[in-house]
Image 1 (cartoon, rainbow, N blue to C red):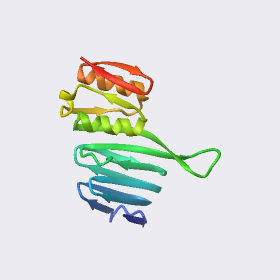
Image 2 (cartoon, helix red, strand yellow):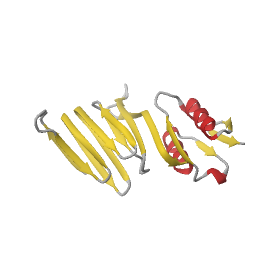
Image 3 (cartoon, rainbow, N blue to C red):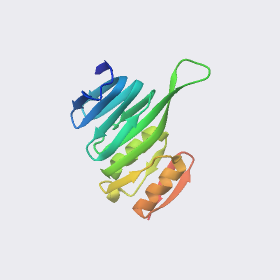
Image 4 (cartoon, rainbow, N blue to C red):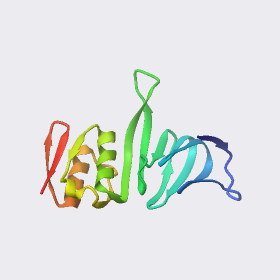
Length: 164
């Protein structure tokens, strides 16, 4: 883990390169974390641009985090806002994109972040998906995934079942 506090300089931009991604400093305080395949950038002040192979460049604002959830060609932005009753910061997924990522990995990320279960035909586990789930709620994003897969989806409580 690396923690930086860097002054802005248009003539001499500060760029941190890590395994497969880079962060360009635009006058800021941020932290980069990398553990195995998990990569993350937490922004505390200012602005940074995060580029990652297979994903669009992402600009972070204060109290936002960029992560790949340990899945290559995956990128997400999470906002941390303070809860009204405590000083603890609560996460909120702002954007989530996948570029040629296997369905089993897409499903794992969605399940963890939305606290849901997804059941899909096992023969589709390694089918590669490209999708951007920015702005949608859980139901909308699952419907979009079903559309991409040309499947029907049924919801039973917190479980989504994909069928042909």
